[in-house]
Image (cartoon, rainbow, N blue to C red):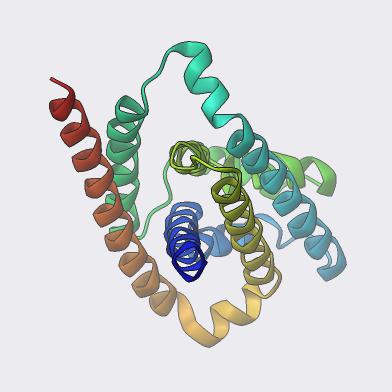
Length: 217
């Protein structure tokens, strides 16, 4: 039993670390603040809550259906690991440069929704998807779901998703105060550290995929 608990705890830490760095809340928060600056504090909380809820549902769905998608399209876990590693590495580089990937939102899209007056529309898109839940986050949960041989492991991953997104919500709702206390420079430093961590995780994913493929030859 102690060994089981230790294994699941290690997997929980891996899942949380991977997901938190991929969704990159500290990099998203300044964008969220700018895109919602025309709204009242109450509406901004509503947008944050609905946006994170949308992202959470999407991640939970892909977590549960990840293995089914692999089987349906005949995709091997190793191939997805290599592809995901490359995607994560690219995202990590952008985080080191203190940028947000253009697969989430472009500058013109940010301006368009910044001027929009529809809080519900912004909450679902682009805040919920693809800003909070982009290709990297979806790839992350699918990769991690492939590492869940038991129901317990899948439950651990689901818990990690919920913890990550709950923390994301509290970071968004305190975005203004966080930006003032830490400062833009401080947030960029933290983002660069997270980017470095993501690149290390990405390299390990690629190594695991390549080694497994060669071992099968």
